[in-house]
Each structure stands twice: as C-alpha cells, then as structure tokens.
Image 1 (cartoon, rainbow, N blue to C red):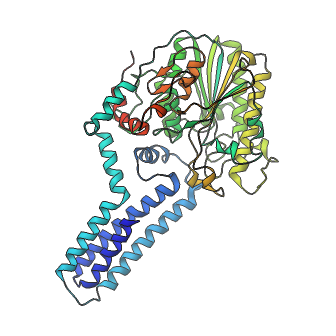
Image 2 (image 1 turned 120 degrees about the vertical axis):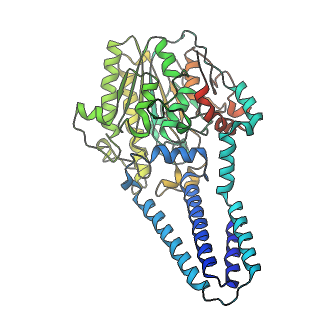
Image 3 (image 1 turned 45 degrees about the horizontal axis):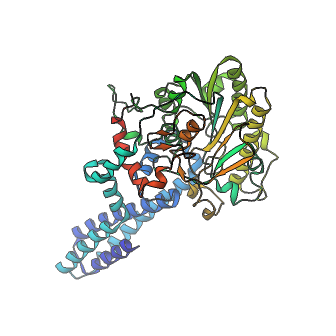
Length: 482
C-alpha cells in the first residue's frame, strides 16, 4: 500500500529529530494512522470493502443486540492489533528520543510525509465519497438520472390470486449450489421453478434489514439518514408504498416470522411501518413453546414447524395471504445445526458452516415439500431468496474465493410453471419482489425495482447503478407514493 510506504518515510524522518514534544506528537499521530489502517484492514477482510455507507449501516444496525461471543475471536484479534499499535508507538518514542540531531528540515519532511500518508489512505477517499453521496448538490448528474429512474408503483389487479410464501435464507450464497458438490441436492432438485441466476447484490442491501427493505420496497436502505419523529427516534419512511402494502390493498393478509428477536436491526419497526398484520420473532415464539435456543434465537427446524402450522391456519381462515419467513441457520461465522440435522453432515464434516448449509437445504426442502403436498399447495406460490450475501471474511474454514464472486439466490416455485426455467437476465436484490409482483400481474416497476421478466434492470441499463443507489439513500425520506 502506497500510503503505508509513505508512512514509513515519515517515521524515518524522525531519526533526525531530538525534540521531546515533537516526538510525543508524532507518536500520537502515528497511533491514529495505525488505528485507521487497522480499521481499514479489518473492514476489507471481513466485508470485502473499505468504509462505505453500507459498512457504516452495518455497524450502526447489526452490532446492537448481536451475540458478541459468536465473534469473540474477531474481537480479540482487533484488540490485540490495537495493543500492538500502542506498543509500537511507545517503542517508537523511546527509540527516537535517543537521537541527537535536531533539524527543522526533518520536521518539515515528517509533516509532509504523514499528511500524504493520510491523504493516500483508503479511508480518506471513502470519506470523500460518503460526503459527496450525502450531499446531492455534488452529484447533480446522478441526481437527474435518479429522478428519472425512481418509478412510483402503479398496481393493477393481480392476474394470479394465489397465496404467497416468501422465504429469505440468512446469508445464503448461490455459490453454495454451484461450487460445493452435493451440498444442496434438495434445493437443486426443486421443479416447477423459474430460477434467476444472474442477480447481483445492490448497495444498501448488505445486512438482513437492508435485504428485506430493498427487495420489498425496490429501494436501498440507509436507515440512519431517515428523519426523526417527535421523540427523536429514527423511523422507517411511511410515505413510500412497498410490496406488502400493495398486496394488502388487494386483500392479502400479511404475516412475518423469524427465529431471531424482532428488535434486532429494527425489524419490528420495519414491519410496523409496512403495517404487517401478524409478526412473530423469538419473544412471540417462546410464548407458544419453550424452545431450545441458539445464540440468535429459535432454531430453524422449530421455526419452520410453527410457520407450517400457521400456513395451514392462514390457508383455512384467510382469503389470501403473504407469509414471509426468515431463517437464521446459516448466520456467520459458523451457522447453527438444528436438532433435526444432528446426523446430517457434508463431506467435510468438520466445517460447521457447510454443515449448516446442508441442514438448511434439508429443512427448506421439507418445508416446501409439506406445503406442496398439502391440499393448499396448488394455490400457493413459493419464493426463495437470500436476504444478503454471506460476509465471506467472517466464515470460518471456507475458501473465500468460492464465495466472493457469488450471485444472489432467487427463484419462484409455482405449479403453473412447466419444469425448470432458467432466466439469465441481469437483476439486483432490488428487483426480486418487483419481479414476483410482475409474475402475478400487479406491476412491472416499483421505485428502482424492475420485473426482469419483462424490463431490463437498472443494474444492467445504468453505468454506475450502485452509485445511483447510494446517492438515493438520503433522498428516500423525501419520496412520496400517493
């Protein structure tokens, strides 16, 4: 890294300086630089990016309430790196104080080199990029494109009035189906399917709540840019219309279930803003039964059992319904093995995450199979997608090259579909629910979302789609769907 090389030149300049106060200052500046560099390094290793609005969002949303023991090794490594930085600066000071020279030119060289090191550091560029994104006046060209690209949804009556079960798989990557032989045989065997094989992850959809919002609303999520209410709490925008609300207007009862707590990542706030009729998370599920828990909440086998019972109940009592299901079994770093999968292992039985993926393959297929074999199966459309791609740097024991280039998982199951249809049209995680609404005849455009069965995705037509998505984040609260 050029920045670090220039930083070393700055340190070399200190060999010619014998000013105690100056060396204390240079040690403090060096410590700040090292902390920034360590921060950059860990961000890149564990998220695949330097600082972006997405990584800021991840830190603001996904840390509060997370089980830190799951990430103990990462936390320890970060603390050890900081301690090493402190020790380096202390040793640097005591080593430099022994020099006898005192040259002003050396001081000038130090400040020139250290300033250049900070400027060349990736964090400086990231800060500038974030500033321009959050200040649309610096992006007038992209704002003009943005205004033309956001389409207010104009729903029509559905041509397929079937119930919908929409399943989000936690941190699941399409490459699990492709690059790991025999890992997901049951998912791969599903038929009566439209399989979308070229879906990219859009900016603003890199953690679970972003994935839910992005797919259902056709917009990226930057939660902390939203306006505060009268009590100072930041709220999801209610002035835009998303998929669940469009379906409610057409008579659908809306239901959501996951094993983790609904308070995590503000899921309950999101569901309330979208007026979901029924919501179940860890707290609600434990009121039904005293389940065994993993670090995040109720295991997927128990959650799927409740979801299927509720599917039968909803099928018998509701005219039409949307049932949204979110798993937790493949959450980084190791995933979780439900009790129904205790004897189910992958070829490399020592890899916890691959065993968790194998378990998800089994549990998902079992849930889908029970729905399809029920008397309500033919009247049900099932959709499966990942909420976001796995942050591969946090997964233990898997070659990151096998996951770092993965597309998203997204397919539609319906008895009306003949065999398996492969769709190679490009799309993004903002297009998925819009494509489903297009499939059932309601609409083909929703904000940034496009029905890629009929219309090209912005991810294909725009030269810099992610830059457009980023710029839109602070503007979303001002959007209004009437």
